[in-house]
View 1 (cartoon, rainbow, N blue to C red):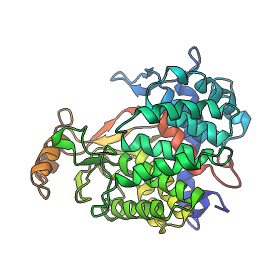
View 2: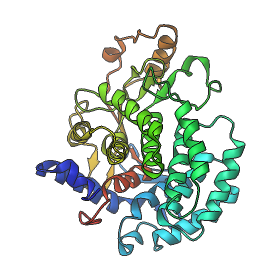
View 3: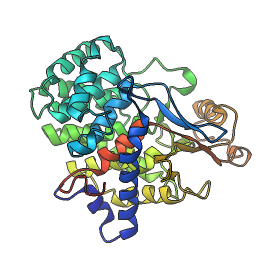
View 4: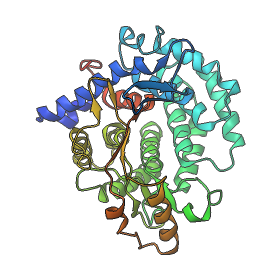
Length: 382
């Protein structure tokens, strides 16, 4: 784009501009709190205990790669506090050095994507590991296959990966049921339990939209653009009246199976980044849907307040139903498998969406930066 993305979405709307700048500011300030300096890695989550104390838990190479995809747009002096004193390029080298021991296709694809974005000198090593895992994966998850496509499409800037990118894109396109307009969870039939084989989550929609848009932008793949646009049309068609991006979709019909939880990362970054990539690639204009989703971040209707915490410099994870573990999702998945148009509407009253998940994960803040820090003026909101 010729202008920063926040300009294209917030043009003439000072309130929207301030909201996006606030998201970027909190993300830049919050990421150093999620870094484990003693281990040179990012935590899995930062969460609030019942006592009010905020702590770190776990560690994640995957989340570090996503942070790289966002923080690489910052000037180097702003990168170093995020990565424990290292630059994005140095931290990327650290992640690449660990890939021989990584068996997860999604993790390797994200590190390779980050290396390609940075045009890292060790990109070929990351691509070699990605090829090995891709060849060994017979039925990859849709999300992970989308990350493979994004990695290979980005790598085209510096390495000839056209044949691999086309092949990866073809597998992703083949998983799309055009009559329904929404992706399933796996790229090929089989592998999922019978009662949820028809269920695709929101991530199963937006990462392919993003990946296929990037593939088209890189190689002029018209079919990839068509599938991305069709999927975007469907998730926008069923978007909530308060701008919510819903959680589970029926890959046979495109209808929403279960709306909750509503994740803040979907609202402020994952949906915008995918739809903006699609707009850039020549798809339809979904700017109004992006704005509606962002407005939910100002005050989530379900709980009556924002999930952005300026004091703790984080964004709380989601608004969920007050329910035993995933009860509504499980019941609705089973019923919709048997009766595609049935949804157990009484659960909306019995299990209201009034619970906030008091945790925040590094990948969320990384995607915020990846989404909004593009074009001239990068870092101007920091």
